[in-house]
Length: 383
Image 1 (cartoon, rainbow, N blue to C red):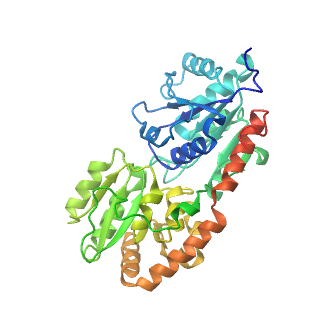
Image 2: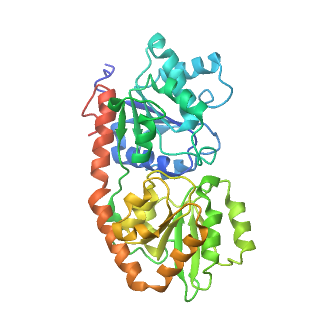
């Protein structure tokens, strides 16, 4: 006898702008791994070659990567209809960021006609094309598309304000769910070989960052800030992406000869604690998971003042959150921490306490499980 819809595992379709490991992908994979076999997942990437986060999905999680109509391209009724028909195979559609909004629009247009499953959209931030300001045409497009969504999920207060303001979403449909991690994994110092191939330069402290190597992350800015202190600091960059060669050229131009480009590493608790200072140099962030990981590992933080970063770090660490245009200030903040062991330690401990108190995994997991379960009309299926 075939299983009834109430008995079988829900089938979740994930529409990603890309699926290389960044913040939104890390959280989606984290939830998939935590839920194990309680749900089946299908993942579609708007950029077909961008599938690096696939390696982070745990063995045993029911997941496939089906061929689907293109998520991006010239808007057309035929493409939107094809996307909508594709969605009919699933019980819940989960879409992520601007690169998947055509999927949201297709769902909006054909939901009633084709009796489509519910859709929940997630917005985690912006690429370089909106880092300096939102585009009015995209705001209008989002307003129309999101009118058919069951919910809009954002991880930061800044994005919540944008959703309620320029995107004109109702208070009832906007859900602020802060990113959370298993902070206990970061409590112990990692093994010295947690960063494969890395050799610490004698007499130097390690500045580390975790980021997709995209222009909006502006790793060249961090390269220059570390290069200004290259007699005392060494830089480690963990991540992959199209900006790798740009970063290497910037390091060569500024005499940063011991830069370590670690590539993709899937288990940050095994290496983040090997850094002495954590740094972010992005033009745009919202609520970076990598920052929570660094805080849980007991690291002091230097960052550009983007998204919710200043509110995320401990109060004592906030003066090391530097205005976006102040590149000299970023270098000076790194220099001050490099010279003061006691300050680095005290900031790291206050950041660790803040992460444990405010950014634990259980609250995030329950919030997503309840939201998705409500849309599935099966409130406890993921709990």
